[in-house]
Image (cartoon, rainbow, N blue to C red; front, side):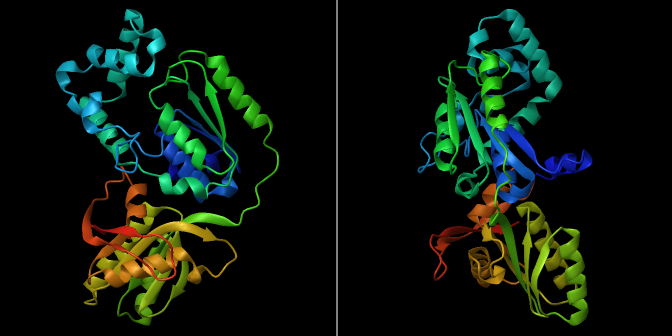
Length: 344
């Protein structure tokens, strides 16, 4: 998300239509929910909210069903290209020239290890809970017989007001098959985007930190929150409440603040949750703050606890977690429950 925002800033683009293909879709949906004022609309093509199978997500893929799970250097290149093309561009299956082209494309794109890591990252993605929080115009595209059709349909059915366009064919790759169908649907969608949305809520990550501090420590805390692009909601000598537009930055800020407290001999504890926040409302009285406070109360000194929502949104960030407790978190007056994870 930060990369997209940086590019938009560099070219003076105040608002843009974002296109997310395959695993680009989860990032685009998260961007639209977090920065609706920068998002004129989103197009999701052959995408998914979650890739991996789960008991409550039977349309997902099990690890043994993926060709990258058994990837070795010996089959890197042409053998992998055949598997890739047959699955993602069946309209050109059997075309030896196409196999050779995609073998070059894949080998130049990364190493076997990089491909495995990309597959593992995709298997960790889960933005299902973000879908209802998207309030910008959305087009969901997929081809009728492609391998991610059920996952794409799932997204379209859960994003408020989304338009679903099912195109003929079986190709997952948009530049293979009937390209004019794809471009035509996108063009029609963009042509009808006129009004800016009325924004009343955004997706945000709330951090609550409790420590025995001093006024001098508050100044250091305030500086670190600003460094990680957070927004201070409340700060006293014993408690910080801050809001961030990126969950990974919020976690890194929390870890920095706990390290600061340890160095001062005052162990702190922290809780983080990502949720929909109403703009103009009492931010301290919102659901994200309530859940983050509940997580902070469970944390041991020196520990950062996050909800399962936060963990799912930072796939591929290099941040690791352990399951903190088997008992899910429930907060009085707040619907739902969350599994609890500790930042390693």
